[in-house]
Length: 174
Image 1 (cartoon, rainbow, N blue to C red):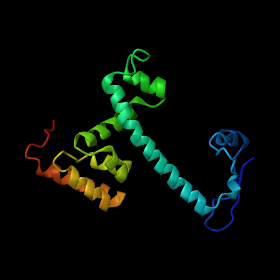
Image 2 (image 1 turned 60 degrees about the vertical axis):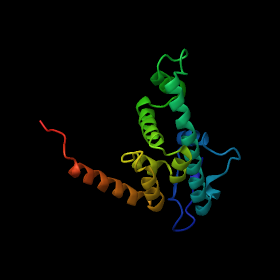
Image 3 (image 1 turned 45 degrees about the horizontal axis):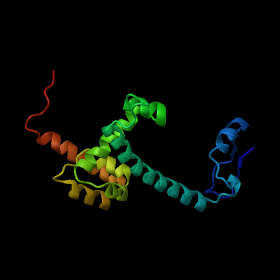
Image 4 (image 1 turned 120 degrees about the vertical axis):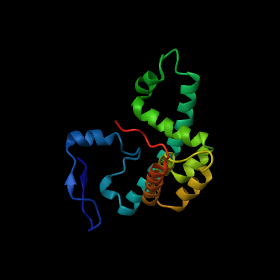
C-alpha cells in the first residue's frame, strides 16, 4: 500500500491510497519504482515542470501531424472518417482535437511557426489565436513573450471587448 507521509509544513497531506487506487496508480509509476514517500518537495515540483515541458513538446509535434493526416485523408481506408480515426484509432475526443487543430491552424496560417508556438507555450498560443491575424502576428507573439499567462488572458479579453465596441456592424439581435 502506498502512503504519503507529512515531513514538514510544506509537504503533502497525510493520507493513504486504497489498494484499488494503488493498483491504478502503479501503472503511472516510473520504471525504477520510485517510492512516493522518498519524493522531496523540490524533486516533485521539478518533475512536474519537466513533465509539462515534455507535454508541450509532444503536443506541438502532434498537432502538425494530425493536421496533415486530416488534410491528406491518410486515415483512409482503415478509418473512413478523420473523426473515427481520432476516436477509434488514437483514443481522443474528436471535438477536442478539432479545437486544438483550429487553434494550431489559425496560428500557423497567420505566420506563426510551430517553433514560436512552442517557445511561448500552448496556453499562451491558445489565447493569442483568438485575436491573431497575418498583420498583427509579430505583435501578439511579442506580447505573449513579455507577459505572464494571466496578464495575457486579460490583454486578449480587453482587446476582444474593444474590438466588439469598435465594430461598425454589430451582430443583429432578434
